[in-house]
Image 1: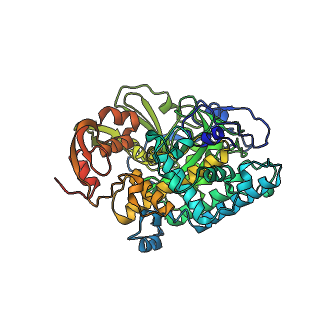
Image 2 (image 1 turned 45 degrees about the vertical axis):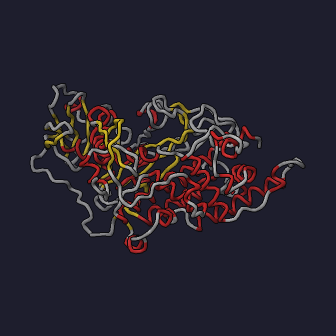
Image 3 (image 1 turned 90 degrees about the vertical axis):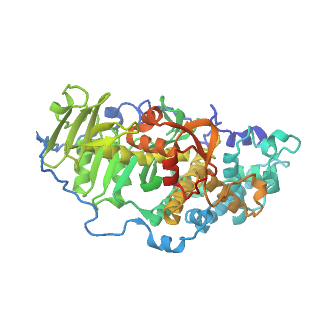
Length: 549
């Protein structure tokens, strides 16, 4: 593999990522302009009608005395963080939490399969001068070091792989050569594997990542179970190589990529991941409904609430979840089957509300603010509440919309924090991109989520990653990594520049989305000396253990 090919692995946000055929046939591109499964909702959901159609619901006025039929955790089961983890890691380091997921089992899998794949390559026709001839089996310690270097590169991006090993250029000076030689890094990057190719069954598109994914998901679920709220949505891994299940989404920053369905819970923690590998139809069930029911299977029957956007939400999904003692709250498309026409077709002025309810306790509500919003819920009536926005004005909104904005923010907050110092770069093989996403992004965020709740202290995602890099490289020489701030107390400092308060912005994003947050979050001139983020004074002392200057 030449230098240009290797550089492709770690060159972020590019327009081309090489040939990813992996000796497979060339496949056509799937166009997905609606940020969902390809084509419009009616086509993409692949509704295969059953001969025995359900009777249409009868919609009536909302019962003023309505109470949700499904209540949370009536059996008092243990939810939230695993108590054993709380006891063991009450004084744990960031790496202790990360090791819950990147443990010996995962490292051993990567070591075995990487060595196996390298041996397979050596059996093939190899040039006498090929770097593969210099191959030595990787060890668990070296594998951790390799992953630590990739995470480090995400914190300090450079134009190419070679830039990290330049010694005669002060612009690209780096300490990475002190931990691994360039040729060795390139060999590991080329042979990195997590599956045995010889065991791949015909037609299994995700075989190369399934074993690792299953192991990680079992560890995610072991560490934490959802409390009352869950949220399901899509996330995109940027990728532009050839791949049969690659998605194209016109209105996304990364228009080409691999789509993940994520099930997120409290404090940006992910408990479920499903890689979209093509259309899957079930007789009598929409694809969107199938995705929700499969991903939430382990968490049904306990009175939890599922928050979804309008691609998933439907009367049929609400009915299925109610049958499994689970509530649904979500936005709704006006052309969904079984929608009450009186609600959908109603035209009214700003601030007005109309709602209908069926005998199952499913409510469909429409409210007009700047635009019309159609909602479906199995736990709300048409009740409204008064909230105070950041400008100090009283705003009246339906309670279902207030709760939805909070619940739907679980995925939005995960994606927002995941975007900081993203170590994913251009890669020739799609499965390596997925593996780096799972190990160096999702696992890191889950570890940080547990750390903040168990240790009861906030930590910036950048500082958290820096500490993981140090541990993975097994170095106590802090100066090698620049000025890593590890002050015990955070302090608020006055600066000349201005920026939006981080905590206010996050709260506003949960209430009304990114556009809403950008419009009304006020700008301040005070910044945390450790987090390097802007905070207004009230939010700063709410977010930190700080010393007032």
